[in-house]
Amino acid sequence: MNRDEARLELDATTLRPQDASAEARAMARGDPALGAWVENRTAFDEQCAEAFATAAAPVALRDEILRAAPRPGAEKPRARWFKPAFIVTAAAAACIIIGWFYFSPASSSMPAWQADSLAAMFKIEHGMARLDERAPDLEAVKKILAATSSPSPTRLPVVLSALGTYGCKRVQIAGRPATIICFKLDRGREAHLVVLDNKDLPDMPPQMQPRFSSSKNWHIAAWTDGDQSFLLATTAGEAVLKKLFS
Amino acid sequence: MEVALQMPVDLFTARPFSPRVTEPVPSFEQIVDAHYQGLHRFALSMSRREATAQDLVQQTFLQWARKGHTLRDATKVKAWLFTTIYREWLGIARHEKKHEEVEFDPDMHGSTHPDDDTPPRVDGTTLHAALEQLDADHRAPLVLFYLKELSYREIAETLGVPIGTVMSRLSRAKDRLRAILRRLEDSASARIHPATFKPRPAP
Image (cartoon, rainbow over all chains, first blue to last red; front, top):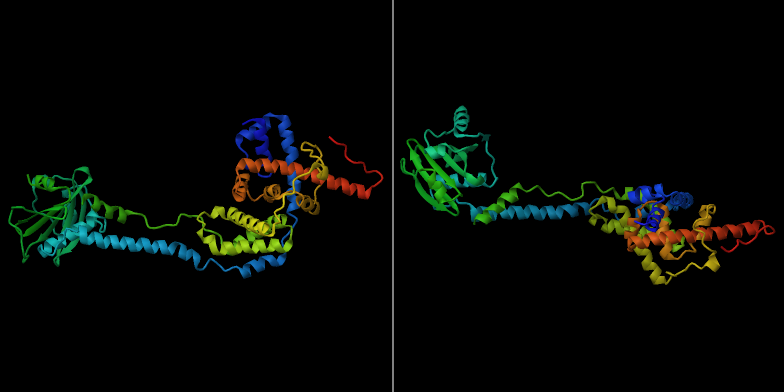
């Protein structure tokens, strides 16, 4: 910035010195002639601004403005946010419905308890339902479930038992109490296990032998161990699922 | 499918809709109270007629009532109002062909004394009379400047001209205003003390 530029800027900011750049202010401080010139200009400008402010608008003008202008307060602001919010809500609802029908692994062709289990898992996987309890491993989960008399796995495959967990959720599956336990897989993926009492359960899976299947991009294993039945499902892939039984 | 399944996650974890403006826009009445005086001064200086000035102010607030809700940034209300009133005035001036160019004429208005140590005396009436003798291109930034409402950057934005242009116009306008005021002062002195009045020597 040269002296002329500083002079122009300082002249444009005599009444609002805070708007002047630090560089221009520094030049005025370091150049006595420029500083004196700015002082003189400021005095004149302040005098003019003061004289200018003496002219008052007619008293009736304010009332006329308020009387003539339609008030925007009551309707316009509402319209401003209400319409986009409605569109966003409607779009979100549409996405949920579409997502539910197109991506949910639950199907009417599968046993009711499995469809219910997959629907509950789908909600947890996509954040539509929250876990009741957080716990880092299966032992901690079992303690929580024991304390609330909720269905808790008596025995699980070794590899699955060793996985870390996110926690658990108590649900109703085919009209009976059940528990979903969420296990941690690699790369942030999850496997969800439903455990329930299989007394009078129709379409019970085979004893101690996982039956593998898939629905949409979900891979599923179902088995029975004594009076408990299990359904384990993940979107991590078939190989990952089968590895849990190795 | 994998990609599609990610969509609901983002959707359900997304924050709810919130307007961009965190600072609430003042009520219509608050805005009128805060700005109608300044707008009136500006309009009167530009139009030079009380009735037109009042019309301009009313029209500006009418525009605000209709369109102000589209303004997202509450800090821009003032600049919006001054920009609108200036445009309204330009429209009237063009329509009435009143946007005359009153170029500064040293022979008519007196010479400039930009570095004169003793600036002329100023009162409201004299100032308005002097401002009327400035051409609109210089009068507009100078009036906005004396209102002290807007920074020179905002004045540039309001008038739709580059910042550099505003700065140079302000500087020239002040020089011219001083000269006009000096001439008016000299004329007044001549009327009061005709025997002792001597014309200012040429620089």
